[in-house]
Amino acid sequence: MAELKKISDALKLIDAKKESLRKAFEDLDAHSSSLSSFTLTWPAIDAHFSSIQSSLTRQFETLQSRTGSVPENDTPPANNAVSLPPQNDAVPSHPQLRLICSAMDAEPLLRYIMDHPNDREALRSELLEAFQVAQDPAKMVLDALTRFFPSKANGDGSSELHTLRRSCVFILERLMLFSPEIGEDVRQRAKSLAEEWKGKMKIGDNTLKPLGFLHLLGAYGLGSDYDSTELIELLVDVVRFREVYGLCRGLNLVDKVPDLIEKLISSGKQNLAVKFVLEFKLTHKFPLIPLLKDILESARNAAKKLCKDGKLSLQSKNEAASKEISALKQVIKYINEYNLENEYPVGPLEKRLQNIESHMAARAAAKKRLVGAGYAPAPIMSRQQKQQRRNHQVQGRRTTAPAPAPAPAGPSSVLSSADGPPPPPVPSAGLCGIIPGLPMGFPGNIAPPYLHPMEPQLPLPFPHAGFGLQSHYPPPYFPHY
Image (cartoon, rainbow, N blue to C red; front, side, top):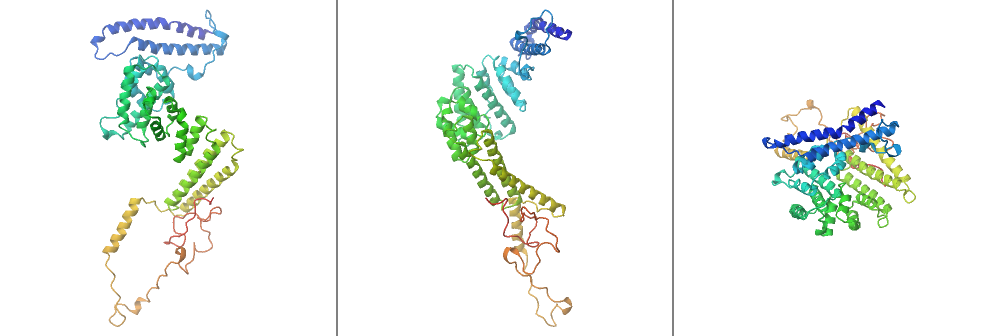
């Protein structure tokens, strides 16, 4: 009880102390002309301390309700309880935002967002609150966009520019959600900037450029000035970004989402199409089951292509298996979340998933045994290294002089019977690179360590038809369909 009384008395002194601070600030402001840089204003400082005061008061009231006690001479809160989420009771983690926005400082705002890339969740709500104390948030944000397209194109791929553009998109997204009143002069400036940006990008440019352009249109209400078909094409380019759903709403393109879904399906992006169907509740137009089956079929085809392009190497098999595993897990998640098991049973999918994962584990175990036995896998060569090796081989054949013909046998021959009989001719390899008469595998009855009962033809780091010979029949990366 005594501690609560002390806290209550301290909170009552805040207004008096803030008034003393105001008078001190006015005295300092009277001498601001003597200072080289003085940009602070009392409304900005007052907003900052008022925010902290409000937060402390809410926390104190919550503490009172939990302890069930009220300090003397204090009026209990309504219903003797205050139910507030804990996250709303905390002191703002970025109070500087209110100071920056109240001073309408565009460049410091952009720099602050750039300097805190890992704290976006807290900034999402606090930036909206900071916009409330800005005299003209739309103008301030527009002033912060001047460096989105640099004057020199040579820095277009720098990490600094990428961070700047990502921060601009973040601020525009928050402004679009804040939906401020926009003056006609600011709107005309935004319209001119949009035309300038449009001329510096193109369809198919799936970077932050079209994402920033679309957010500029949405934040300043310029979507109606552009053809909806063109905007849909740009949305397809940026569909991988999480902000794309808000853009569809901010640009008033919700009625065009079916066209966007059709484009995603036709371009083989069924997984993204499913997300749009669920986000905008369009299952009556696009049933989920055919789309989920298309996701699996597309993943299997991509897996086969990976194996073919990788010439059935161990790496290509693992990449292909990982791709199908990811698709299976995604489809199983959709089926479970939206109760689709009556239409699409998950049993066969889970069995398929377990089968592929067990084969990947078997390959990893076989490779580990081989490395433990002293057989290191051959290093993976890049295309350039392979070409250099071929060039060296061709160059070596050109520079090597042909061996002289052997002298005929007789007294004058340099060969004698002491040298022993000539070596027997090396038989040519037959089918699958197997030399007739040579034993297969290791000597004795030792089972080769690369075999596994679940996959008897695992890829080998050395030829399995005898050392130095290549098999013509590599195995698939997992059982056939």
